Image (cartoon, rainbow, N blue to C red):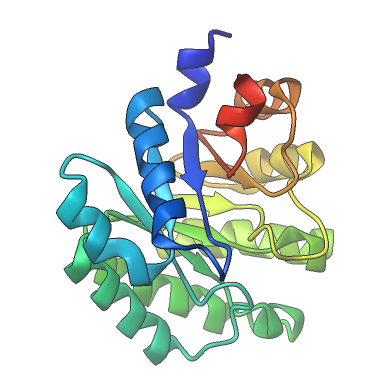
Length: 213
């Protein structure tokens, strides 16, 4: 696989809590130079990026990284992010309610956020490292039923990241219109290619450019 093809699948990411504006500028300039799918950045930087980089695709995170914010607060985050210029939202599910088996509540929350996103892309982070196989399957069904655009493995802030076994599980239980994003712990060119060839449309990583160069 050619490297320029790999870059088309990369959400070039900088979500560290201490990321400075200089770090975000570097991220954006790299994303433009290498033609990545998007930059994934903290909400506090969306407006500034939109003002300084006119043609860049902006992704941000909601309910990040723990997911247990109320649905109302997540909706407020979505509205604010879109108003500031985000085109893609990566939300974290309410992991506590997944563990409680309250799958309907989780599905309803995803559906509410997708409705608010409208034609903007919604990716749903289920944080696989905390879930059983049964819970992962339930989340595949919830994401599908709620009409989200993507299921995403991980925040990158949990105890583990993307696993190829989870991608294969997703493909068995997701609806045909739901795409897959892998994130967390993808550190080599071989890993990038493996996840893309396994069916991941997006890879969330801060290190793709370093890896490929």
